[in-house]
Length: 175
Image (cartoon, rainbow, N blue to C red; front, side):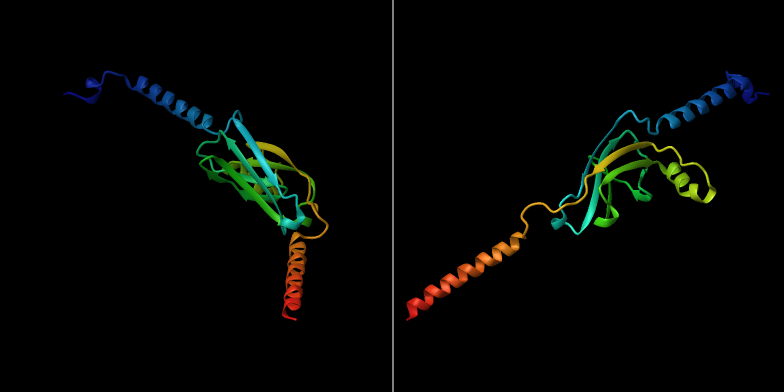
């Protein structure tokens, strides 16, 4: 009688140990595929000129080592999605000027498990989870820059003066 064990060159104990080693290596690879924090850079833009915008915008662009990971951002208490582009990631927050005063804002980035824990922290009374990345950006606030009157008003007055001058010359020629 020829059984499977007679033809198989490895004993079942060795096969089990190899399978256990494979599972451990797969778990280590999965754990190391997340975000290590080694490669991270960001740049930010905030609205500063009040006449040019009706609301304040905070836009953050960043590159991260979090490959194939869906990230979410928390600015203040606001949970925001992170959008991926070919050049990196972008997160933005737009609110009325009064709701985003001049301040230093902390941006916390979380992966899927981290943002779920963040959303549940208030319900369960748990501690705030550790973000994958965290950084601060300075928003200097909005102010009125430039001339004390709008340029549109200056153009309108100049146009009226040109029209009045041309009309006056035309009236003198008609006499």
